[in-house]
Each structure stands twice: as C-alpha cells, then as structure tokens.
Image 1 (cartoon, rainbow, N blue to C red):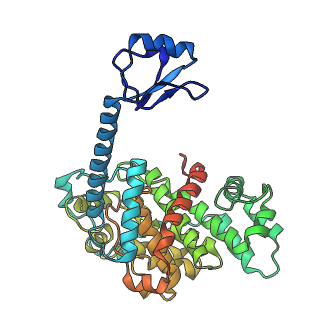
Image 2: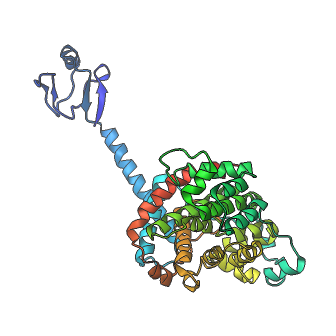
Image 3: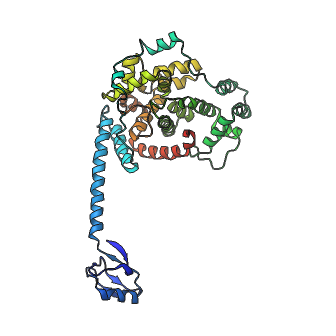
Length: 408
C-alpha cells in the first residue's frame, strides 16, 4: 500500500481501502480500480490523496526483509567467528553474543575488521631476543614519565589536611587538563543537575580519589596519541579504551562499588602495555599482528609466545615505575585472568568490560577476537546477564558525550 496524490492517480490503480468523504459517505469500495471519471469526483468531494495497492512497494518491502535476514545471518556468522574462543552456551556469553549481533546489524558495524598481513616475509623474522622485560632493562629504553601534575596530585591527596581547593590548585597548573576534567564532569558520564564551573566544586562532588583517578587517566591518554598509524588507528584504540572504561564504571555501579573512577581508569588504561609495545617496538608489533592475521590465535597469546610475556606485564612494569595505586595494578594486570587476582571482583569487572567492548566493536586495540570469559571470575562477580543490554546502551550514550577527548 502507498498514499498517492489525487492529481497523480492513474486509471487501473486499485484502492487499498474504502474511500469515504468527510462525512463518512462511501465513495468507492476497497479493491475497485480507479477510472478516469473517479478523479473528478474525488476532487469535487475534497479528496486530496488516496491509499492504493502497490505491488511494487510490497515487493520492495519483501526484498528489504529478505536482505535484512541475509544481513543478520551473515553478521551472525562473522560474530560466531570472533567468539570462537568462547563457550556460546554460557549464559553470559550467549547474551553478549546476541547483543553483539543486534548492535552490529543496527549500526552497520563492520565485523570483517581482520587486519591483512602487511609483510609476510617480515613476519617470519623475529626482531627481539628474549623476554621483552629483560630487553627493556638491558637496553635501558626510556619509558614514558608520569606527568608532573599527576605526581604532585598524588602527594597532595596523600596528605590528610589537603582541601578541595588544594587539589584544584594543582590541577589548574595544567589548564588543558583542568578544562578536560570540567568537560567530563559536565558530560553524560555524570549527568549533573547543574553546570559545574569550578574544579573545587568537581572535587567536592565526585571526591578526591575520583579526581585523581580521572587526572591519571586523562594525562596518560597523551601517550596513546603517539601510536604509529602504520600499526593501528589511534582513534580506534582510544575509542576502545574509553568504551572499556565507561563500561567498567557502569558495571561497578551495578555492584554498588565505591570509587567507580578507579575502575573507569582501570578500563581506560587496561591496554596501555600494548600502546608501549606499538610505540617502543613498532616492527615487532607488526610481526605479532601479522602472525595473528595468519592464524586464529588471540593477540595476547601471540604476544606471550613472541615476547615471553604479554601487554599486561609491560603495563605492570610501568605502573610500578610510576608508583600508581596497587588497585590499578590489580585490575589491569589480571584483566585476562581475574580469578587469579588478589582482589578478583574489580579485575573481573575490567575483564567483562573488555569482552563486551570487543564483542560490540567499539574501537579496537588490535585484538580481532573476543577474549574468553573467565568462568570462575564470572561466578564471583555475581551479575545478572539481564544488565548487559542497559549497560551497552548507557555506555554508547556516554561515549558519544566524551567524543571530544578522542579528537586529534
């Protein structure tokens, strides 16, 4: 069926429903073909448009429905491929899989983001000799230094007599950091009832530890921007990291955990070790990515085989060097095996957030597969699978509001 203007009616067109005048008087019954004389009658009675049968339109709708079915089936097939390291019968995995297919179909998220080999000959060559941590130590490769603002903030927050004004004064030494923090506090991430225009207000509202956590995360983001483009798109990497941080924060709220910003930062920095690999060892990183593109291995497993350790060991090395809180080390180092963490629940939150982020396709850190779920950690987390749909919806909304952070 389709609506056609009276002026465009053609003889032979068939009415899709009874045609009545303004008083309800029947002028022509459903199923009758339009004749040349009808057009003049309709105009006399003030009929400006009529509903006619449109076989072509119905055919198009059938075609669209058929094409959509094909798209869903194709998407489902590819999502099964990227979930191959997971048990699709597990209730949590099954629900994340369903939401992954739904989100990718609805938003045209490409599931074929499989990095092609950039140089097959080079892939056979190994540039590093021995464990990468040993190489870092022997070669004395200079790791990024923690920003001075973060270091000073750490000292101020450690003092029991520090006030919100003291903390605000430290942050204000970096105008760019102060501006970003205020934007975040005023974003959908917090949904404040009124605008916060002073950092001291922000500190009072979300707390000193939270401001410190945000300052750490935002300051370290500058390191992400140094990723060589030939390895991975920085925007994709940052989007993946931001999305994981946001989902961590939302999951933490479902668990009624305090200091949700520590989990936001844990998610934001969970793949920081991979950033350092890409920056400090670009050729070896390309080899690792190429090797993965020719196999069905998980990226962190290929890292372990090639480097003697994976990206979590590298970020642990950096966190210890920066003297950051042990909670960050716990959550980030164990995000692939949270059941082994000293504090398994927050590590499990980062773990599940990373799985959801990869499954839905929110950016990429280089891993093409969905990491396997740690069953023991999932049981320990004690979450309902019914929260996932709301979590993803909230995360996407909040991610849009933080798009400014991801701009070049």
